[in-house]
Length: 98
Image 1 (cartoon, rainbow, N blue to C red):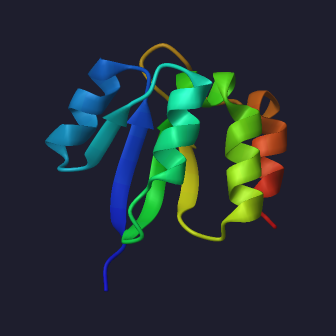
Image 2 (image 1 turned 90 degrees about the horizontal axis):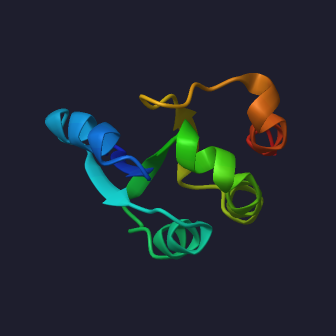
């Protein structure tokens, strides 16, 4: 069985690019919108892609979700306006190893 992908971003342009790769996507501008989207993620989603701009505003939510849930795997990717750096997401990255 293949793991399905879900992208979450606060950047419509990033989501448009991911849609061209046939990746389902959700727009979330606030931490509450990200929290709600993660809580309602379909059980058949194996990997969630979150863009760096949104992740920078919501690192605590992502960390708590990763600790509470083994799946889906959450990965952070750069978006057109924010680039991933390890120091920006130190706590988020550490939670992935749990």
